[in-house]
Amino acid sequence: MSEPSGSSLRSLSETEFAEQERERGRRIHHNDGVAWATVAGSYSRPVFEFRRIRPGEARPARHLSLLGYSHQVPDPEMGTRSVGFMTMECDALRSFGISALRSEKRAQVRKGLRECEVREIVDLSAEIDAIRAVAISQAARQMQTGQFDRPPSYYTEQEAAWRLSVQRCFGRTGWRWLGAYVDGRLAAYLTLLAVEDHAIFMAVKSHTDSFRHCPSDALYFRALEELRDARWCRRVVNGGVAHESLNRFKGQFGFAPVSVAYYSPNAGVVGVAKRAWGLADAARRWFTRLSRPVTRELRSQGPAAAGRPEGPSTTGGARPA
Image 1 (tube, rainbow, N blue to C red):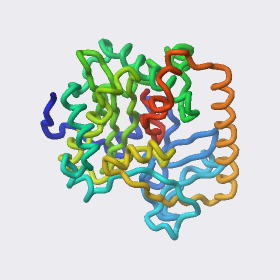
Image 2 (image 1 turned 30 degrees about the vertical axis):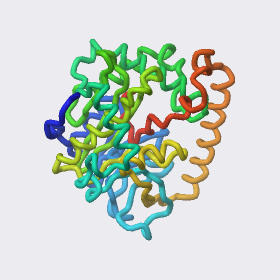
Image 3 (image 1 turned 90 degrees about the vertical axis):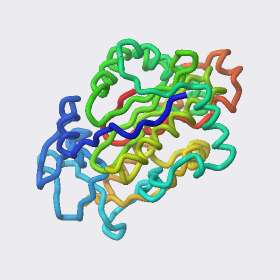
Image 4 (image 1 turned 135 degrees about the horizontal axis):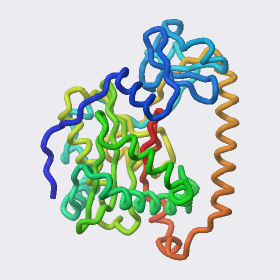
């Protein structure tokens, strides 16, 4: 069983994060004292998603925001829309510990810490194939429920692109890769990104064969212990508000849904675009499930395994695995 040793994770400044994202291929520019990322051709938003800006205080360059822009605001009344996130705020984080968990979750965490070795992943070349195997296992499992981000085929058909995306996030300042190992084999991994006073759970993935060892419970606990002791951290973001089982899993560790206000000068256009994207994404998932039947082995795991809450969605442009 691994023991916590305080936090050595250093938080990135917004400027440092913007430079990292530029190196990873995103279109970044600075205007009005804010680093902006341009997406979808000519739509911009702050590269650090949780930068709060009063309407009119800053905006991206006009030629890089022809389709519009959006940003978070400090007061909900300033916003034109809201987005749900699962977060742990400062007070809850500072009081986090085994005693803060309900009895059932305490038992699962203790089992995970007893049966798994949790340690930082430091040698990517030695672990990247195991990381890929975990990602494929989770993608196949989640396809059964329709609640998946990438299909298993992505990790074979786009293997080179996936490996490059991992390499660009690994071993960088502001990032932490934690692994849970069972008998020396990687059973699950968690990636953290630290920017300003925020820590963001970028990915939590586990291998179906290792569920009984509770590796994700062990990872969550060790990661939150470290962040509790990191004085720079005042909020942990664990993806968006998702389906009920995933929200419940996160809630068992103290995460709670919050509504975050955003401002966009063309909110109507943004809303239409988001609805169109949502419909297109739902159609993509449906066709992917039809074209990629699940294996007999996965079906034998049953619906409980398929629906196990794992893998929070990422925020921002960084997308490690």
